[in-house]
Image (cartoon, rainbow, N blue to C red; front, side, top):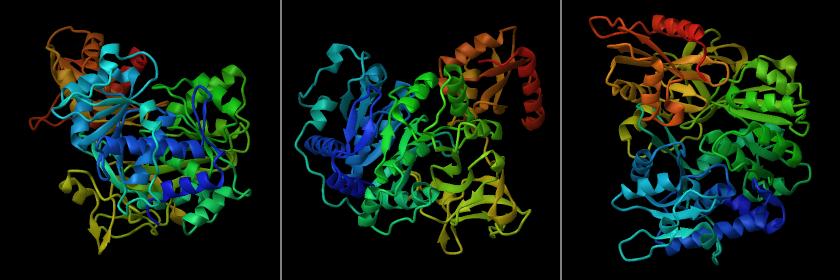
Length: 547
């Protein structure tokens, strides 16, 4: 099948148009019929503004219904949806728009200043489709401007309120781009073909529910209509810009379920708990302890039990056994903790159905393998060490980076693999122990932070002579960004933190800075990072954890 997502959604809309698909933060609902009509209207608006199949639609939105409608319109028509991180500055946004060569951009008025600043930096800015989510853009900048050579903006309401018709079948090569940091610090778009992305989701869509994956679109629609298929109501508490929150939400709609949206750039744990309880959410999508802990704490404060929740999904973040136990204590909750990457989908899963299953170990997917240094498969050799790889459904590669594509997606013994660089130890029955990432990337709260960028911000302070950035373990965020700096005077750490924060996105700024006269580099410029991490951990404990 090609373009399965949109075809299944259209099939559900035809079979049961009044079924609830999406619920907004304000309580407004979108049926499958309305979702399809608005996707068709948006597709028509994009066509009217010269956006063609293969062009990119950049999506700069929080978890809003418009996000899902935009993805729907794109997958159905062959326009490429490219979600972008909304936690960035104008200059970063301009770079991403240029990198993706976006023909159009969907963005909220609350980010109007950042968006306008980015578009002003581009020689050929994309068409802007503005979502009214409250104040944020001066009225004079919000007006539609259709003069020759100027930017042609339109409102979301104008876009979706058009007569449109989705094609009966999407292009064979319809794609979805998911931006990832890669390993160099420059964001890269992993180019997923829609049919391959669908194939990579079969486990999380059907198998975890005990369902047999259907063989075609008609079977998928029939499964969604089948009364024996559980009605899934998903509340993504991680942002859609994270692959798992988006793909699990798309899977929910494949099942004919309902997606709840929060419309917030930050986690409001108490609001999330109330929404889950009032809307009967059966599935939560979290980002490990960073999201799960505040939600569980809020539920305790409010005296609310998440009684309807039967499953919790997470990936890419530390999800501790202690936190999982608290979810299991809520009732019969199945926890699906995925070891996954943007570039390769799922590699392994730790699934626990009760406290007795804890702590659990990840179990390899059928398409995942472990490779030793000679690139030999050792996933069946208990005790072996190796790097994780997969030869299942894979992206085409990175947009605009053939060298990195060849490096990350090597052909091994005639079969294309993805090798993200994660080291594991093989346990019994295809279980593994995750040992760590093969790069210096700091994964904090699900966001990848690259030390070089943070080090450059620190070194721009006139008193800083040297700097090194590492990740330190953190109970909530998995890791925090921490820095050791050498200064030439008595500048306090707080001043250095403020200086760096003014030059970095919020999630990139160091949470702790250790100040020293020098960093004890070797004559070759090397640092003893193990000792430095130990010193920084002790310094953090002595000074108190920076919030």
